[in-house]
Image (cartoon, rainbow, N blue to C red; front, top):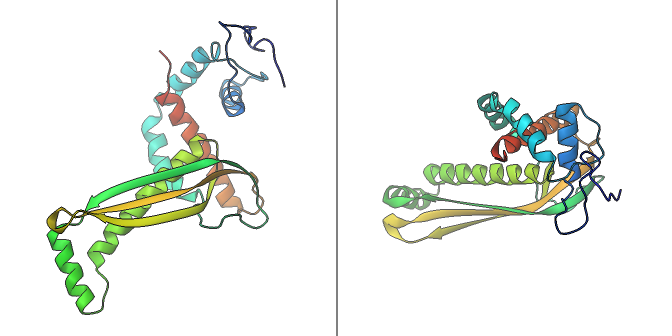
Length: 211
């Protein structure tokens, strides 16, 4: 819908000193937590409203973060370019990188294990931790964009340096999407993904409080 004035404060949306309307996701966020039903808010009148919500959430910040860490993995991260029977809109690319040291001890362990034909558990654990960190970063970025899944995910592993200065780099990239019809998710996954989105919105509100 096109507005000439903000439906909430009547500020002009045209001209040099005009305001901009918020994204629909932000409008829904304000309406939900302040129990309002406005069609839109502008960048001017939304500031005190978002700050009011942030002040409420700040008291719950530790619990919100703890819960989010427990359930963030419910946001799907998959290599499929287009899941069958999913209705979704593409939001954009998300990427993450992490590095960790390998060092002489790890190199020695890997050499012995390679010689005897077994995998290096030390290296595998480091790769696993780095991969999980990248996945978590992708999920947070996705949800902050308004998404609830990541598709077409690619992962690369590289070593930087040599000898005791070796660093393991894990790079991951994918496409953030917003699934509009979540009927292909189980009831538990669907409810948990919705909770992840809501908790992330709360943390974002706290982090972006406007002075």
